[in-house]
Length: 445
Image (tube, rainbow, N blue to C red; front, side, top):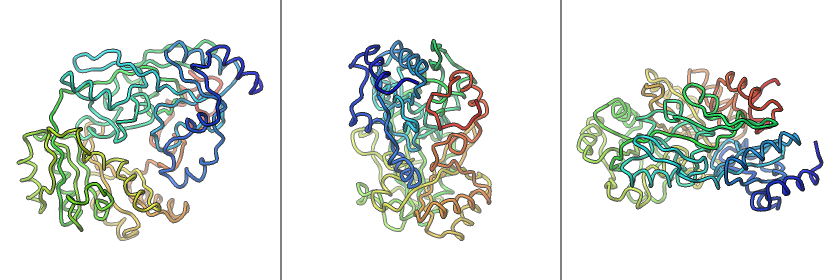
């Protein structure tokens, strides 16, 4: 491997100062993401050495040039979108080059039911553009204002809209353009089942430069906060609403008290000592939802009419991992888990957890469809005491059949994917020197 000084000069000569950056402030800024959501990751990554250089390509040719250069000099390359991930996805564990793709932000095509996008398009911009054309994004994370489409596909899984359309693997990516890291990088056009090796891959199996996603017809959304005397009532209501195919919805997010008390902008409209369910439902269906809430002992506490959608702070700004963010603003000792409960026994599982941990664990669920099935996913808040205690809690969840997708690791094998055998094989094929975001996937060369 060439010395830093040698390859830096060569890289600047090859790509120029408009693409290549070496100043410390930029390297430090673009070598971090939102890993501080996890006290475990924060402790391990806060002093991590920044990248040795940053490349900000403007097109695919420059992406290929960076990858070929890194291959030639055996320099690691870590891809980055907007850096809104929570697991250290964009942190270069072994230095090298951070490949920031945020400048590749053109909307290439919007057709009937699809959008073809460069990877750096921000989801908020895409949704606004799609809605102006009578369509909308099907699923997106709570960070959609900042998050890029490539970052979401490469580092996310689901979000708002998943109650109707499922996760990224459920047909929410139609096609992708991916570059390999070889002497001469290949441009691959990937579709169908092959996409599974690139969704939620942290850029370890290839660099995604273009994504085609499905669009849904534009819907006018009403935002609602339903309130219930008990969390059990809120969950029963949420399950019934999730299963009701006649009520078009985008969000069902129940939370036990005191979680809603952390949402300070909503303090005037959220009632004390009540479980809250954050909802987005199609305009015109509020009466049906209100009747359903009343049948489970609840009521509609707050409504934001459809004409105010995106014009004021919305209920989705307090859901998914934004729930965690608001909680951490109130109490810095809070962190979170990602858990999959069983539809047929989630009440029993919740009861066991409460008996074991009390208010050390606070429930926050997101109802989704996964593989077409209604599923109660959970992002519980946990008062952090120590790493040992955190993994005691994780161990107990797993002992009663609750699946944990560990958000306190940067390793794909232990985190959001669970099974990465096919991805490992793809990495060997597309990244023969193991230079793409090394350390994020365990495999043998």
